[in-house]
Image (cartoon, rainbow, N blue to C red; front, side, top):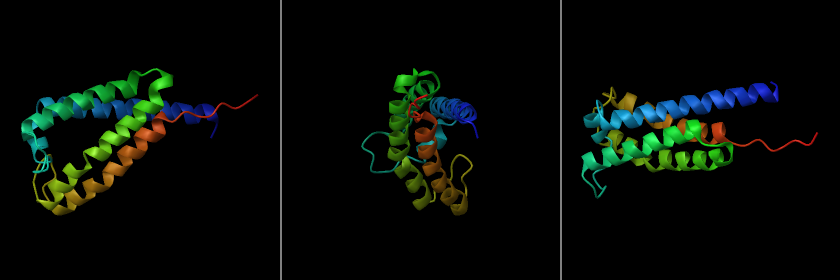
Length: 137
């Protein structure tokens, strides 16, 4: 695969990830708000609705940043997004361990499968924003 093809794939992945994260943030604030409350662990010291709203704002900002951040900031944005995906992972674990049906995750098998998706998001955030080292010509 040529470096140009790799770069095109990385750009497409970053834009898709950014759109997905922005969409999830919008869902937090609107049609899926109730569903996202099921993912908020009981130990979070805020009201579940507030947690969902705040995380929605963060997701919208991260998603937009993934899509439009200047090249110099992309790696940092990717690391922030990966950190965010890691920080919200306990919510996915809580949904699984407390058997909370929400957002189509209505069986333990589906909730368990969802747990394996979070590392994919972390990887995608890091990989699609990674800067290739300059090659001397």
